[in-house]
Length: 136
Image (tube, rainbow, N blue to C red; front, side):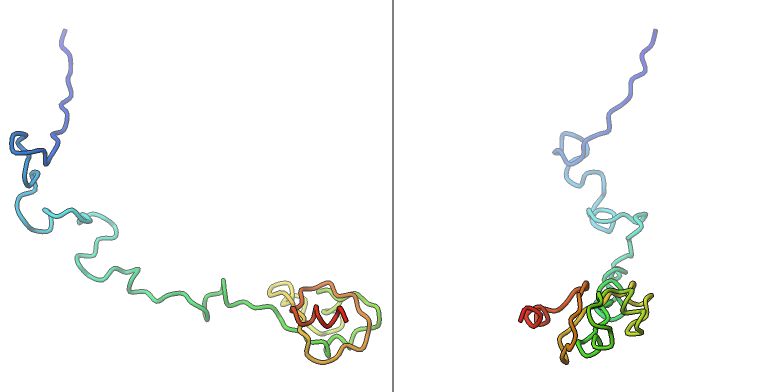
């Protein structure tokens, strides 16, 4: 009866007595002797500036994640609505102040430019200045 033994791989860089000391079986100098990306690695570019560092940053304009801002509506536009009505996306679209598709896509924010001459129930985000004016 014979046993099948598997050989362990030799540990490299463990001194001259191990048989794979000093250079660890890599020879001397050159690209293969150094401990960086191998040729077969997908990001290997042979010393050229890496692709990710050559591409521009995605800031501001053209970056849809941060460049979409809400549609701004001022108090003077809200005067078109009837007294006592609720201000939300649907009613703003109904009175032609904004398009419903755009309002749902970008959102709507109310700013405090102009004067509001009617009592309305506002159900949308507002700026801090508007909140202060509505309290008084």
